[in-house]
Amino acid sequence: MKKALMYFHRWWFWAFSRVFCFVYLRPKFNVEVRNTDQKIPRRPFIVVSNHGNFFDPWLIGHLSPYPLSIMMNEEGFRAPRFTQWYLRNIGAFPKKKGESDVGAMKYTLKTLKDGYPVLIFPEGQTTWDGKTQPIYGGIESIIKRSKLPLVMMRITGNFLSKPWWSESFRKGKVIIHREILSPDQLAAMSKEEIRDRVIRYIANSDLEDEQMAQTPFVGEPATVGLNRFMWMCKSCNAEDRIKGEGGTVSCGQCGAVWKLDTHFQMSPANDKAVAVGNLLDWSNWHKTQVKDRLANASDTALLTANDGVHYCDVTDLGEYPTISVGRLELTKKTLSFVPSDGAIEPFTLPVDQVNDYVFQMKTIFECRVKGKVYKFRFDDDSPMKWVYYFRYLNTYAECEARGYI
Image (cartoon, rainbow, N blue to C red; front, side):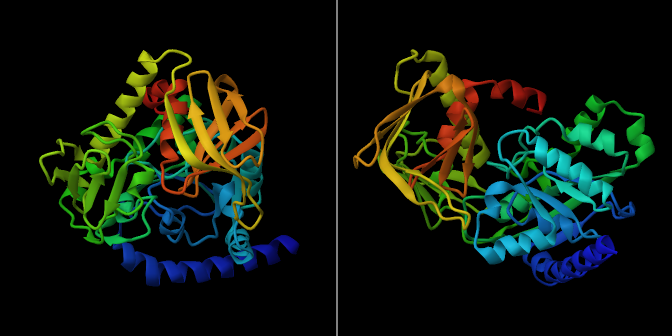
């Protein structure tokens, strides 16, 4: 009886949220659903998808007539109490970002056993540049053990509509593709085959998609906040001098200016700006620069640094109180924080002990050392470059090549 009442509660809450999606989100994002000849199976089942923006759980979730349980970044549950209440009632449950989470895996299997479908984003976070990132291994084990149908989704246009750093929407077209594999089909596949099938199906790149290139995305260019992602000037190589305003991106060091259109195509706007291409091209150039620096730097050479960094804590309500303000420095061997306010003593973390390095809430670089979490907040500079350096200090290039971590 208790389970039946709980399901009834979840169903009504889900139904209300679906109405919001149909009335508000679908028109706002101009959503088109394809491959509808394959019907959503009866519950329970597993849904996997690429992840392009914050609203993906609802863009995908509203297609299910059954209440979904949604695996989400645990940081989202550190929020105002109403948000926490809504997430719990919608069926969301937390997973640690940037690492495998055995507890979340166990909860997923229990949720499926209780009869609820589960939605998982195997990338573990939204795409940085519109291209699907390597997925986290382990999803294939859940799919294999569950012996349930697998609903694979691929969303195009979601990144172009609202990338992670932007506060503004642009209306173009969001297309949701889906393919459903039956338990019998999955039983005939190995775990590795399942993983590779998921990787191939959810693979997407908004900035390389021909249909997206022909679709106008109307609205404000997503330049404000772009410096949180793109931190290095291609004209002069200066770091943390990029600023976005209106329809342009400029460098405060050399004065180069680029025009940015609604498809993230970048064109030089003065004689100081070199050719960039689009945002994905610029992102790939950043990766090359980081790899080259790592290949040529000595163990003790300074790779990058930022001043005015807030070493901070986090509360259950999603506030990030500052512990100290200072300078963050990185070499191949050490990550060091040197306070400028005298609030705490300087500390140094061995790079080979730093793991689970991710960015949170657009402004925070987070990592763990021996189970302790360190959070560094950047008011204007990029937390992303720190993730880039740590990824390529380790084995991320191999992960990109094979498609999974």
